[in-house]
Picture 1 (cartoon, rainbow, N blue to C red):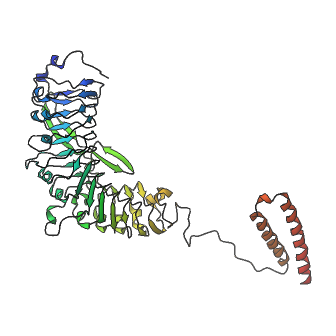
Picture 2 (cartoon, one colour; picture 1 turned 135 degrees about the vertical axis):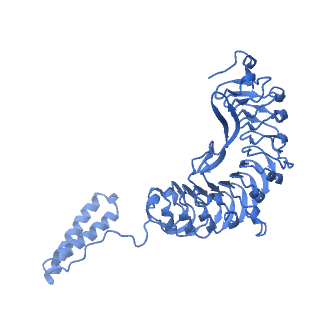
Length: 474
């Protein structure tokens, strides 16, 4: 709950300090920077600081780790920040910066390997530099939620160490960047909520081996303008999603700075990602290496769903909703044994729901609504936990949990009729006539009132007299 400093940071023996953590307080005003320090790790996140000195490099000669996320920083990002020696991790996320991104932060002519500018207010017209160095050391580039425009620079493929690329929620206009597929270490690719267009496919057979995204575990192409049939070539070589790993709880950490004092250790920078999971927008503050996701929702894809997606055995979340897919749900999807969230809603899918989907015993969220599916809803395992909302908008579906019963469903049967004897025939006829009259009046409703009761009695009396005479004649 600290709100201020009694004296300047210069009173501290900073030359001997390697790690200064002031995070999660209520400190405000300009960012306090120690002077004359070398190789210091600074964490000022989650405070109320409002500005960075424009000549920040004159204060920090060397700082490998600078964390200023979730403050109230405004104005432009000072270009002098590129001159801070040995800067490896820079996190300015969730502030109020405007202006453009200093190109020196991305061009790769430094030691910076983690840059996080998520959730700022960069001005419209901001673009990415197109002269990124072949020695680019970036491992994580997180620019989600800014005003970035224009196409992606193809020189971004020079960042051979890149593991996390999050460019979601911007205004980027480009075709699918298949050329990122040659980044053999890329695990997270988030391009959602932009203006990407055209088909999603890899080059022709002769070139395909160089662009197959071998390490990809999170792919988000949602809310763009992608069209056409969904090419199987994109999914056939996603090898990291094909093998179920026992290391699913490991965290994707980028180790930035090792320090030695009374205890040995390392400060790890945890890469983050914003995704839609189980219908909710979430930010993964810790990306587990075993968390695999594909989100293709809110585009204009059409045609059949590629069967090859059923080979991605480690997939945990699959969202293909709000497109124009046709045909049936591939029965091979029953092999996605790790699947927890499955959304195919608002398409034009037809046919029956494959019985094989009942084998998905980890499935917690299912949405097949608003398609043209028909037939009986499979029963058993996780399917017994889903409600009407998972299946609504499919007029041809029947069975639980819907109220619509399927043809051939068992219903209460009437006892087999017994041949009436001569002694019981008279009573049977009287009972049938009375039953018919009773149903007629119940069908008219109780609103007929007291008069209906009187009429009922008169008719019943007349019916009995008529029956007596009938059987007397017989």
